[in-house]
Length: 225
Ligand SMILES: [Zn+2]
Image 1: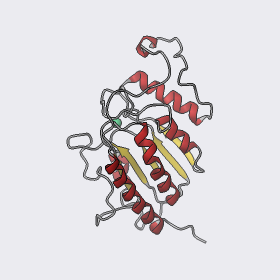
Image 2: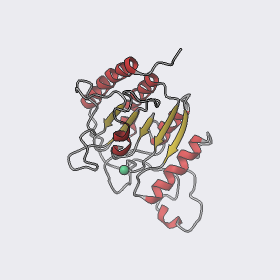
Image 3: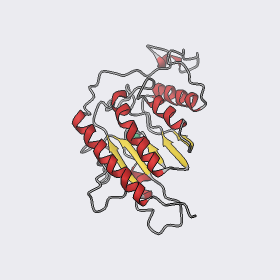
């Protein structure tokens, strides 16, 4: 399972594994990209829209969950049970997680308003995945506020090692120390962008992903007995 948290759609990976199940001798790979999609927003792809189980080309192993502007801890906390449901249906042996940090508050893209710590945050999501039975590989990704990217990947590493740093931890003195102003601490707190993921939209996403999970259960490769 490939799970992508980058602000941008995982077009390369998703397209590489699209339709890879049919007649392939290799194990099935499921891709789930959680990203922002809008006209003109990178990358231009016909498959970045919300997965549609009624589409004749629907592939239950190539999944997209776009979020609107301002996506915050609250929105990620709400959609998290869907991610768990997809994982439970697919039962991956391995999970590759792309930890793009461009959805965090303070990124120059200023599109999402995701935080590093707290319930529903990026760190919280990674902690949930650490409790899955699958083996996990964490990758970096996008992220254009360099101090915040360093904060994020340091914190996620500490979470993966089960020795989570305190959000209040001081940034150690080093050559780039001035760039960590004004807080000089580890946390990436939320900004002021309003979360435009409405209850109506998220309820629709929940409905869609319930159907997707059923489709996975019907089509997932059963172990040979
Ligand atoms: Zn990106």
